[in-house]
Length: 162
Image 1 (cartoon, one colour):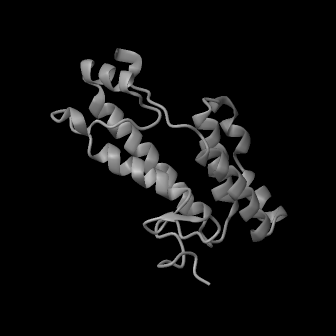
Image 2 (tube, one colour):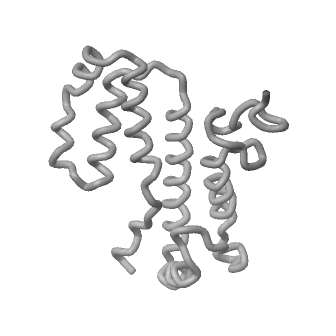
Image 3 (cartoon, helix red, strand yellow):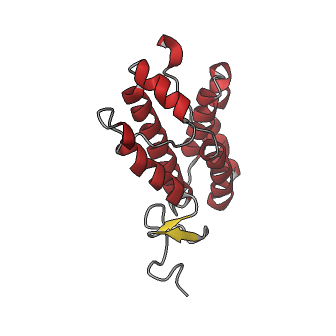
């Protein structure tokens, strides 16, 4: 049985685990692809192109335009959405998971939580995961860590000069 009428799996992340929503995308990728499409069309010379997407509301768009930060916001959001879509691909990959991948995920989580003082705690963790866990166990750990990164909210870090 097919994943959807026309597709065997999500055309972006390759999953069969998450339900098909539309245009060949799963329930995780579809909303991100829609946001990507909307934000890519933002054009300050055409105000009607500036459609609202979370976390941006109409007041934020107005403030971004007045402070000449709309392009910064656009690039920031596009980067975050593309990153999240990439994480979905990794999550659904059948590649072998080695300890280095897990160590890097811990470091990424430390970095985004501004907890860099603990980032060294995970140094040499790769050996521990390689020797004490088989690939299936490492895959479970990897997926759990990826879900922490995937489920974080989008943010704008461009307000310091506004």
